[in-house]
Image (cartoon, rainbow, N blue to C red; front, top):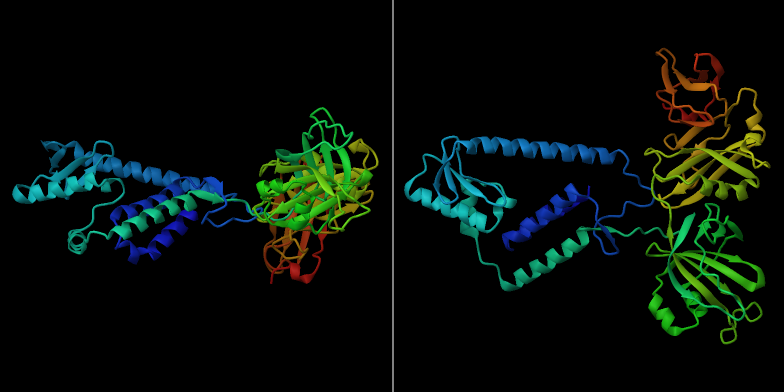
Length: 514
């Protein structure tokens, strides 16, 4: 997509290109070609490539790119082979010039050691001019990127050629440098909200020991859960230490600067505009701050609050003791079950065991978890079932919705159809394309879920989910095919025996396609 954008920009600048040297056009074309071949570059804050936004997954688009690259490679190979066959019968004329009766018009073949191939019938003065023309093309490296134009176009190019003015050449060089910098870099992620994730400390920006405080060094990692609770882990062998619930806080850059004890420190850190922040007060008037900045960076600060003189400019001794730049440990496509369990236990107010995860290109930027919950550490003894919907950008998560059903794990056949749908929308807006019926399956004999969409006067449409390995979560889009008058759902075991059956009732008439 980005290569196409560059090509379009090049076409819009076509009238201007006629006034600049030809190598500028070659360079701009090369930028587009490189982007189409390898659409992955370093991240920079200054980039003309549009940001895909949080949670946009390329998914199947990557396969189209791979298919296109294979097709292009095959076309290039076949074309080269075809030209090479023409050149096989060529005889040496002189130097790097060859002639063949199979060649109908002059062309150059080869990159490192280019050869000129001419029709055998060419001779005399005309031949000298053609050779001079092709040698000039090789000298200017035009054979690397430009095909042979027709005679009319070549004559026009020669007649209209003017030596470019010096200032135009300087401007062209500047444009090429800026283009390379901006188009050969991907945009830095501009996520401006704090996302839940396991975070490592990428850089210690500030640390000080106060009074009798014994410094044990920074923790190995922090966890901001998807429902905004803060944990720390000192070492790999230690468990997670619960610190408390984070609450939204209107932190400004001016306030943050007041907490920094040294003026030089404020200048050196250069913290960009704060766009989202959370605060946690702990014992002895200490506090944590977790905040996000305009450039997509996440920070964690630890400090002491002067509660008695808070807000009194000259007397307020509130100070930061630690300031860390954080980096998410998560990667797109990788699911950390422990993180989701931590993220749900405070919301559910019980122990949680996650057993199913779902992400799809149909709902980019969202993640759905199926889970059991209860007051036992043994998940086999947990009695409740539920599911939760998270917003994600691939490196972090925010809890959007959570539904828990008491004693649902105790249903007789171990198959529970949730009365509430999973809605992949930040505002909870139910639409046919973002809403799913949820079926939670604990029955180990279950092998297949089948849905029958029945329409008046038409043949039934049947869809099946055959990937069951209990415990399992089966999701079915509310975008029912056709104007389905009724939807029936069946769960079968490996022998084809029915374990569960029933009619699925749409939540409202709008769930049916008209």
